[in-house]
Amino acid sequence: MFRGTTRFTKGGALVALLLVLTVAATASAGNGGKNPPGTSTISLAAPVGAATTSGWPHYGDIIRFNVSTTATTSPYVNLNCYQNGNLVAVGWAGYFDGALGTGDFGLYSPQWTGGAANCTANLDMRTSKGWKVLASTSFDVSA
Image (tube, rainbow, N blue to C red):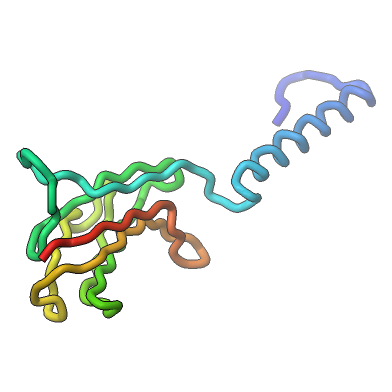
């Protein structure tokens, strides 16, 4: 960490060590001692050219999300939609350069053939222990 020909006296070395330990403790305390730190947001993106989003989205629409995170360079969105408590649609998309696909989600599935639903989208990242939710948004889909 220290380069060059800097010399420390006994007291100076102790101060330097305490400074390093304080900085390390402060860095880990900012996020509960868990990695990775960062700020993350996810929101439903308004449809292109829409004059209003009243009652939107509807069954059958194609949607996208606005995402932002400093926790990872490879964020994913996981979408889950429910009707009457039953899971009727699940989707995953990478929201980073080089990810496969477009990031679009269709609000339909073989199990979801019409009607309203409640959906939740999680902004996720892959960790060595599995998936970690960074941010979340919920919305209703009209029939």
